[in-house]
Image (cartoon, rainbow, N blue to C red; front, side, top):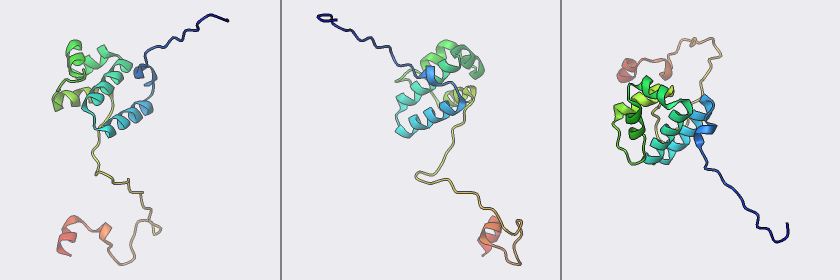
Length: 132
């Protein structure tokens, strides 16, 4: 090996190759959405569409294949309804949450769900809360 130059070969990284489960897709989308980068979001949708099959996603979303490629290209400005159709076709949901809010743990009642003669604020209807 003396005197020979070793060459290193790199291959292009393709996220679509690793998006092989619903959990991986959800984690990927959550990380991308957290960046706030519009082009990265479109690129991630494209990666997921390629992982699931671009033709199938185009058909399920009601978009032509070329239209789907154009809509998901970085720099594109697809409308909300186009994104909603693509997201639905990908089989994922987008959810809205309050910024910085942590998911509240479910509370279990020790009394079998019954209160002992007292109505708590959490058990009151919105109408009761307004009157209180």
